Amino acid sequence: MSKVIVVTSGKGGVGKTTSAAAIGTALALRGKKTVIIDFDVGLRNLDLIMGCERRVVFDFINVINDGIRLNQALIKDKRVENLSILPTSQTRDKDALSQEGVEKVIDELRKEFDYIICDSPAGIEKGAYMALYHADEAIVVTNPEVSSVRDSDRILGILSSKSKRAEHGDAPVKTHLLLTRYDLDRVQRGEMLKLDDVLEILAIPVLGVIPQCGSVLQASNLGMPVVLDDKSKAGQAYKDAAARLLGEDIELRFVNPEKRGLVDWLFRRSA
Amino acid sequence: MKLSAAEEASKAGGGLPFQIRGSLQTLLSLKILRPDDPAFFTGLVEKVAHAPDFFRNAPIVLDGGAVKAKSPDCLAEIVERLKEHRVVPVGLQNGSAAWNDAAVELGLAIFGAGGASVDDPTVAGRGAAAAKPAPTGRPGRVVREPVRGGQQVVAAEGDLVVMAPVSSGAEVAAAGHIHVYAPLRGRAFAGMNGDEQAMIFCEQLHAELLSIAGIHLVSEEIDPRLLGKRVRVTLVAERLKVEPLP
Ligand SMILES: Nc1ncnc2c1ncn2[C@@H]1O[C@H](COP(=O)(O)OP(=O)(O)O)[C@@H](O)[C@H]1O
Ligand SMILES: [Mg+2]
Image 1: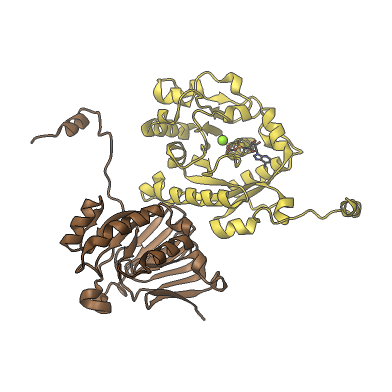
Image 2: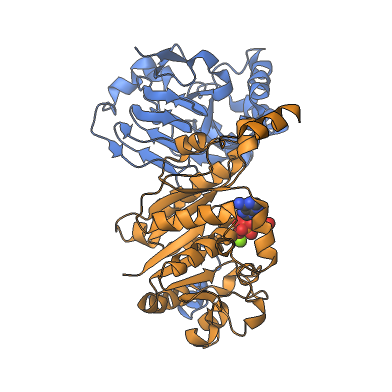
C-alpha cells in the first residue's frame, strides 16, 4: 500500500528540502518506488538539490492547471532506480495549487508508487496546508533551537486538526521527529537544545538526528542527495532514518560525543 | 424567494468576496469597581507596565456590572487611557442602558447579557455563582492528545481534563476546573463564565497565563520556586493563589 509522507516544519531553512531529497533517495535505494513532490511553488529548490533542474519541461502546476499528463512531468532520477521527482513551477505562486488538483495528482501517484514524499514550503499558510493535507505520515523537521521547536509544535497541531485524516475522523497522521543540523559541540556548550529537551516539548517518536555537516552544502552544490555520499555523516544518519521509516530498529548515532583517542585528547587539551 | 445581489453573484459562481464565521475568543476583561478612586489610573498603568508584552495590542472588554448604577462619565477617560498604553478596549459588558449608550458613543461593542463574565456583586455578591446552576463538577471534556501551540480546547460546561501536555501558545478553557496531567506551558482559563470556585491543577507548572473567573496571573508574576511543580491554583480574595501539591 502506498504512503504519503509530508516533510514539514513551520520554519524555513531548517532542512526540509535536504531531508525530503535524502530520505526519498534512501527509500528508493532500498527498492521502494518513490516520488518526491516539490510543494514550494515559486522557489523550486528540490530539482536543484536533486540535480535535475536542466531536465524540467513540465511541472506539478502544469499537471494541475494545464492538462499536462503526470508522466510528462515526472522526472526519473538517472542515478537511482525507482526514484522520480515531480518539480514545481518558479513562475507561479501558491494559488496555482487547487485542492481538487492536488488530490487528483496524489491519487494517481498512489497507484504507481510505494512512497510519495511531499516537500512542504515553510509557514502555516496555504502551501504548507496543501502539502500536509493528504499525509498518512509526517516527518517534522526541527532544528535544536526554541523558535524551530515552537513552529514544529504548531505544525503538529495543524496535522492533528486540519489534515484529511483529521477531517475524516480516520486514524491520526503518524508523526516523526527529525532533528537536523544537530551541532554536538554547540549542544554541549548549551548554545543549542539537546535532543531530550526537544523531545520533552514535542513528545513524538524520533526518526533520526542529522548532524550539522559540511557535506550537506557540498552535496547540494553538486546536485546530489547527500545519502549518495558514502563518507558523509549526515548521509549515514539519513539512511538510518529511512531504515527506521521502514520499521527497522536502529540505534541513534551522532547524539553523543565520540570517544576520542589519546592523541586527539592531548591535541584538544593543548589547542 | 428573493436573492440579494451578493447571493446572486455567488450563485452565478462569483462567490462572496468574504466569509463570515463564528469564532470563539477568550478575552481579558477589566471590571470597573471604583472609578473615582484617585489610584484607579495609576494602578491600571502600573499593572500594564508590569507585563507590557502581555497587554500590548490586546483586546479587552470593560465590565460595568459593579458600577452600572453610577454615571458612565468615566468611560471615555478609561478608553482613552487604555489606548494610550496600547491596550485595545473592544466592548462593554454588564452595563445599564446609560452605560451601553455611552459605550456605543465611544465606538465600543455591547457584549450581550450573559456574556463572558456574568457575576454581579451589586446584586448577589459572591453568591452569584451558587444562585445559577453550578457549572463545576459536571462531566465536561476529556482530551488525551497534546494541545499544541495555536490550538484552543474549551469545555463550555463542566471541567476540562487534559491527559497530555499543553504547549506554549496553546489555550485551555473550562466553565469549571481544569486538570492537566502533564506539563502546562500554555494559557489556562478556569471558571470562564465567572465561577470563582473553579480551580486549576497541573502536574508541571510552566504556564504562560493562569486565569480563574477572569482574574489572571501572567508567568512573570508566578513565584519562580513553583515553576515545574505540581500545583493547585485557586481564587482567594480576588487574587490567584498558587500552592504546591503534596
Ligand atoms: N545537516 C546539515 N548540515 C549542514 N547544513 C545543512 C544541514 N541540513 C540543511 N543544511 C543547509 O541548510 C540550508 C537550508 O536547507 P533546506 O533543506 O533548503 O531547508 P528548507 O527546505 O527547510 O528551507 C541549506 O543551505 C542546507 O544546505
Ligand atoms: Mg525547502
